[in-house]
Length: 223
Image 1 (cartoon, one colour):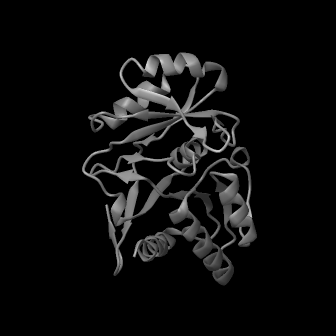
Image 2 (cartoon, helix red, strand yellow):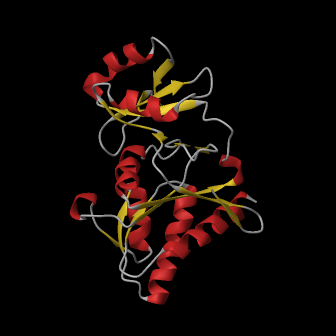
Image 3 (cartoon, helix red, strand yellow):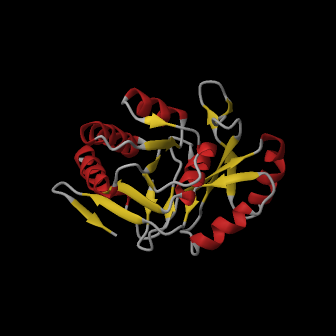
């Protein structure tokens, strides 16, 4: 059921694609479905799209599917970014990063895009953002960051279980999981406060304006 919902959301997102666009490609299972469908549309309609990817995995999938992929630094603007999310509340605020751990590049691309579209299945819609916030940090600052976060939250370094070593992102940074004891009252404020802590490169709260497409079994709903 979820796969059908993800596919329906991805198909609706394709309606926003126009010829010659620079498109930001998200990471995660729903974004991967979108990438494959986008490649088919690009080839069939000769759209001449240029893409920037939020992770090496997404970039590889896009290239293998026939899309033109360039680096983030090589584009002056991004017309449209399409990405998934782990949680979406009624204000269209998001929690991202669980699984792919690509939220640093996601945040760069999604926030630079002129239009940001979020594609999710129905299970990702929540009343309030809660559970955990993922934070990408510079390794040299991790001890001090953990000390600061642990004053109010349960914070721990995400580890690669089979190696008992810190998970290293594509950007050679580490990831901290900050467990929440209650729902986030003001996601926008918390996002800004976390960004001000020295050594934090990005956090998994996304609060920029976006259009949310929710896949259902029969079609989609839009927030």
